[in-house]
Image 1 (cartoon, rainbow, N blue to C red):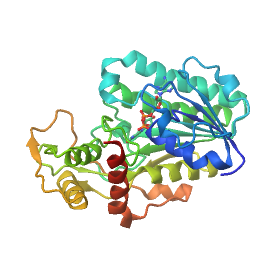
Image 2: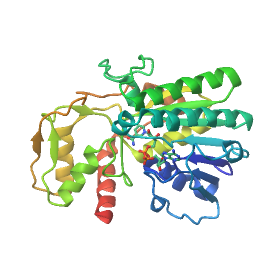
Image 3: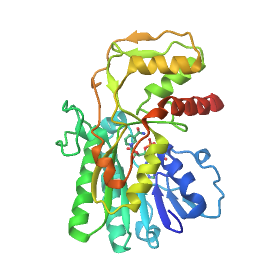
Image 4: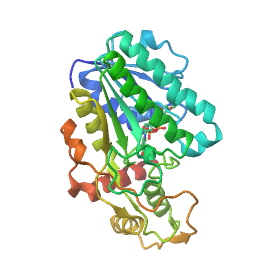
Length: 310
Ligand SMILES: NC(=O)c1ccc[n+]([C@@H]2O[C@H](COP(=O)([O-])OP(=O)(O)OC[C@H]3O[C@@H](n4cnc5c(N)ncnc54)[C@H](O)[C@@H]3O)[C@@H](O)[C@H]2O)c1
């Protein structure tokens, strides 16, 4: 992607900052981020001449003005925490849904070419029909998941009503450098790494035989870029399509770090699902695939980053 005007909402966060860093040299980037969970340090060169950062709440900025010259939008700004959304459902709806509808309206009025939306596997709820296909019913179990599901429906309706091009990317468990270890997603990877680096016993909830579908943040970035470039309008799972148990993950992290710590098993957490696995066949719609031989290398890259911050 070159010589485009790009808006990244939530561009100072874990995933959004990777998108910004990747696209910054060859494009004009505008970031809107209120720094609620984002951090300026996530941007390699915050003073880059191609970058404008608007440190504002997405609910308060003039979205018509912000999108006036924009070609592509990567929309990631959100209350991205399930527990917080359960605490503050009205605020979650305001940030995640109302602001999105306003953004879509401005995108239509300013002839934005395409919007790529960061959704989540949480829209599937406790559906056990693995591997999960995009055509499965939406069964959100938290205000957060409901807000993502509602945004998906609005994106579709704006495509039908006004011709606004969109791709929804439903991420499974994202991990990689820059992830906040207090983040609720895939927190298991940052938790294992930071516990072992600090010499503490890592904790596993339940018997560790629960499985997850982990996807590296740099793959998420590539999926976003491919989605923006593609003609595909619709919803796509972004995941590895491989299941890894928490016990297997523990062994890999332990081996990679050369640690001799053993896990501490704690009672299963309420609401934790047993398995999560994506059907990834639709990723070809955006000409995207994941190299499955890289997991250990990606983990190593993540570990090396954690070593620099701990
Ligand atoms: N990380 C994952 O595993 C994962 C999985 C599924 C979906 N997602 C979605 O991907 C997106 C990015 O997630 P992330 O992991 O990078 O989270 P993050 O919390 O690091 O990033 C979100 C960014 O949005 C900003 N933000 C929050 N509320 C805002 C507001 N009202 N106005 C302006 N900016 C605001 C935050 O400051 C932060 O920089 C989110 O929409 C999240 O729901 C993430």
